[in-house]
Image (cartoon, rainbow, N blue to C red; front, side):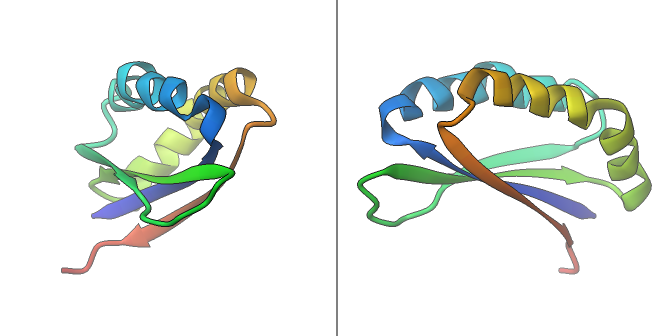
Length: 100
């Protein structure tokens, strides 16, 4: 199984709107691609007056499935996020193999 983790630090001034949009629009859009079997959203526990950091985790069955997501869906979904929250977040992505 492959874990695709997207870590996002969002400015506190928009975090409530962002979290609602992620839960009601973005994550459902990613899941509706049919390529991921599970997702989780986690808040990273830290004190930061500027922003709140979240880890959004998507699980897919194998690397071929993830590559299909990257080739067919990722660019457009990331574009929507950037247009909505441009300048209000930083993000990085990590790809992991679940081994246990």
